[in-house]
Length: 307
Image 1 (spheres, helix red, strand yellow):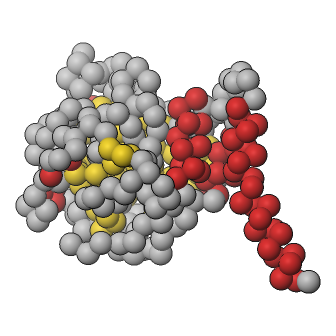
Image 2 (cartoon, one colour):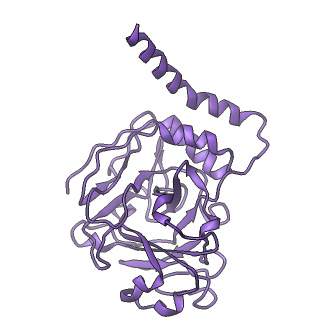
Image 3 (spheres, one colour):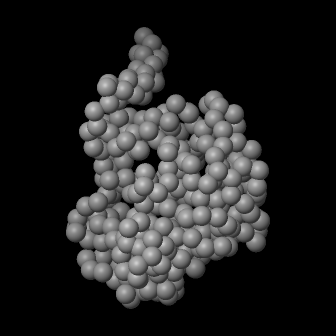
C-alpha cells in the first residue's frame, strides 16, 4: 500500500483537541483549524497511520480529501487527538461494534441496547441527530469525530479501515425503511455526502492507527482518531428540524491489509455541537494568543518582503 506524507503541528492539534473537549469559543477553533496543513487531494487511499508513531514533537498529523469517486466535494479528513475520549466524555451519537467488518447508522429506533446493523447502546449513545444539533467547527464546516476502540500498542490489529461514510438528511424518521438491510441505506433520505459514490464501493478508504497519539501511543479509546469536516453547503436547503443520518462501514480492507478489521470495543462518532463559554481562568486567551503567533509571524514576513 502506498503511503502518503503527513505534516502537522503538534501544539495546534493539542489546542484543537482541548477546545473540542471543553467546547469553548468558536473564533479560537477557526484560527487554529485554519493553520492545519492539508495534503494534496487524491483518490484511492488516505493513510493516517504511520505504523511506527513518532516521538513527542512536530510531525504527527495531517489532512487530506478525496479528489474523485465521491458525492459531495470539499470534505476534509484529518487526524485528531482529543483527550480524554470514551463514553461519558465523548458523548457519541453513533456507537457500533462487531468482529471483522462492522457497520451502522444512528437512530433512536431498533430496540433498547442493540440497534440496527451493528449498532449498540440505543438510545443513549446511538440516537437521532438533527441539523440543529450541528455546530460549526470552523466557519462553513460541520465536524464529525471518530473515537476508534481497537487493540493497542504492539499489535497489528490497532489499525482500522474506514471504507464508506454516507450522510443523509430527512424531514421524517426513515430508519424503519432500512432497519438491518444495508442495501437499502439510500432510503434514509437525501444523500448529502458519500465517501464512495456507489453504496457497495470501497475504492476510497482511510486507514487509521487507533493507538496513535501525539507524543506516544494509547490503547483502546484513550484519545480520538479522526475528524471529518463537511461543508455546510452540502446540506443545501435542509432545515434545522431535519434528521441527520450518518452511515459508516469499517474493516472491509482486512483481506488486502491484515489487521485493518474491527476487533475490539465500540467505535464511536460524535458531532461538534458548537461552542459553550466555560470559565477557565484565562487559559482560553492564552491558547488564542498561541494560535495567533504564527499568523503574526507570517504577516511580518510578508511586510518584510514588500519592503
